[in-house]
Image (tube, rainbow, N blue to C red; front, side, top):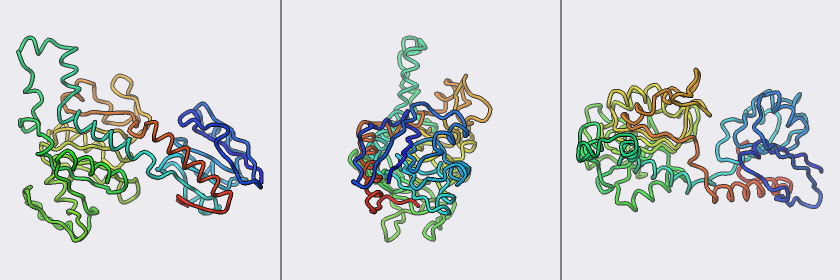
Length: 357
């Protein structure tokens, strides 16, 4: 069989033209889209003859995946772990296989989470801006007190930190490993709303808590006891707005929230209220409700609400943002390409792995 493979996001993850070695009974043409699709109509035009689509960022909605637009489509390979942008129900109804690349960015994302932790806890951006944009250090003699937490406490050291990890897949496990290596206490959260989650609202954080038989700590107890919370969750109906006003109110004023998960897990309006109200010590996030999104002077209606802040306001609230780049590393790209190659070649051979649909 001759395949027409369209790589919609070759501008984002380059694919060598000679990467694939299909079985002898199969051949292919590989179309590399080296510019971002400007509209749904352009997406449709690019994939109309495809039997296989490779995608990382470009959304594949029900119209794109309809028989009218992609009549020959048989396989979608996400060159990513997430498949949020693919209408999987439409694929299921048409018998289109969807495969992904799991765990390819584990090290990079875990490293990014740790970098975010140190930057927030030590207020590195604030210190950097004070040095280059003000005369505060020379004038006052010290600016160390500007590293205090929202409850006016001194910065915590790693050995004092209690890290709550919400979502214990490959990335959560790697973050836990790194945290333990630094001497941090690690709590693994049970599912929100689980039976073990019946912790009274008045419960105070303690050094000794409740663990379930599988080694998990009730979700609400993790929120109360943790000085750092790391979100490593997939996006689905159960996890949307998982962290909102009630959850922020359970946290300590020493708490740093690290968000390396998917958009929509944190209620961004609630996060703004928590930061402005001093309920938590700070937040670092690599993901946003709207992506890509303008920020500061470049913010437009419909962009992420937390990015409407000015740089000075973000500094004051200890908000650190990065533009969904935690995944980016040489090892990630190598893993993406290796598994993409395996997925397509195995599918042509009648073998399947990394199945989503």
